[in-house]
Image (cartoon, rainbow, N blue to C red):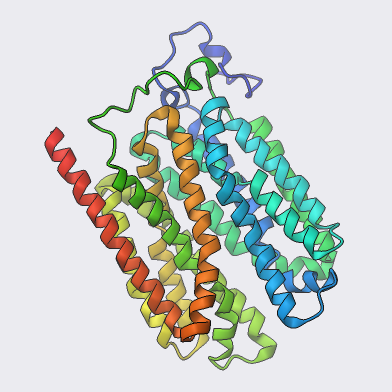
Length: 431
């Protein structure tokens, strides 16, 4: 069948006179693979644009008039975290609106908004404008979050873990490539020109989303808030503690990955790396966890489809905690990089498994809002992680960051295991 010429229409042309499927997922069964590919590309390009400023952010802060070294470090941290703070605040709202008005409009909003704001960052006149624009990028952006809502609600239940794993691979690849791009473009285009290039890259994503994404969304049915969901009953609704465990685990994923980021360059310097190569080595180590996640995200997502999401979550949390501890005892930078690769491999199983659980935790008409809360929890971890890690390092020393993060991961694994037990007991009672 030929898809509708105007993909923004709520009802596709070839189903206008045919009996409609019972659910949003069924009606979009023919579109989800195509939309997944576009979502992966869009998540990759937006994350490249957001993370490419890491290598030159302190230099840009200096160009904007900040003089002292301590102030440069402080403002760089604030500017970097502002985007994730904005996304954490608005992700539930965008998820709710996706339930009301469709997933595609949220993707378009995120891509167009980020393309404009990224270009405006290139013409900032002072550090306050830089921080403000980074915050706005988070408030109105969040393409990867919107793509998670779309893919999470369109993919069949039995393929949701794999699909979300593939989607997270695109975002992780963007986080990996972004700093490398950020190290290459400024000498060629200048720092401001690099932001314009990032805006152009996201503009391509916006065009691809507008003309490529397909969605069959019926506002009169899918957007209703008063009708009870066909997929949610009192017998099958999750325990409140299970939802809390889902959100807490989502936050821990990013907290664990980001806890060492503010001090990783200092930690590497203590390992004897020459100052002339320090930033390059730090970039490699920072990218190592993303590389590991790319290798296993889709596979562990598929494993969650087969053996159950809670099993994968508990196993990955424990494995990540075990890999975290040896990082406190490394003597060379390459040992740290290797352990960060392993850590990325174990962390990768968490996001798709958590996303699948969140997708099934509520009825179909509330899935977008639930996935929005999930994204908010993840980005909260990305904001809290660097703050907690920095404070622990100052108070107790650099190695203590790894011990504390490992302890938090083990505590979270106990919480997740309790949720797994409750789910198994409920399934046994209903059987």
